[in-house]
Image (tube, rainbow, N blue to C red; front, side, top):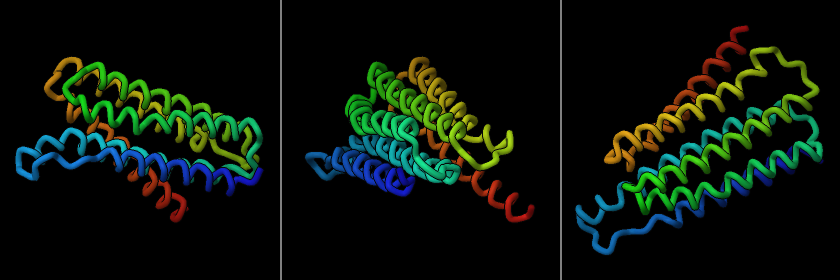
Length: 195
C-alpha cells in the first residue's frame, strides 16, 4: 500500500477528531464574565488536547519519512493508533465537563496512555520495517518522546490526586511535551544542516 494514502487517511481522521473536539465547545447561557469563566476548564482541556494532536501529527509525519511502503501489519498498527486517537474527543469532553472530578481525569489519562501505547507499537513497526539505515540515536527518538509522554501522564495523575483543586489545569502540563517536541525538531534540523 502506498504510504501517501495511509498518511492522507490519517490526516483526515485527525482533522475530524479536532473538529469533533471543537464542536464540543459551547458558549455559556450568559455572555458575562462569570459565564465565560465557567468555560475555562473546557477551554483549557480543549487547547491541551488540540496541541497534543498537532504535536503528534508533526511527529507522525517525521516518523513516516522512514516508511517506503506500508505493509498490512503497519497499516494495522496505524489503524490501532487512529482508533485510540478517536477516543480523545470523548475524554476531552469528559474532563472538560467534570473538571473537578478525579475519576474523569483518570479516564482522560487512560485514553491518552492507550494512545501512547498505540504510538509505541506503530513506531516499533515503522522502525522494524524501514529499509533505510537508521543510527541507534534515530531509532531512540520516537521512544524518548513516548516515554516523556507517559511520564507526563503519571505526573498529571499525581498532581490531580494530591491537589484536587488543580484538576482543571493539570492537563496543561501536557504542553511541556509539545514544547519539547518543537525544540527537539529544531535541534535535529540544525544538526542535519550543519553536518
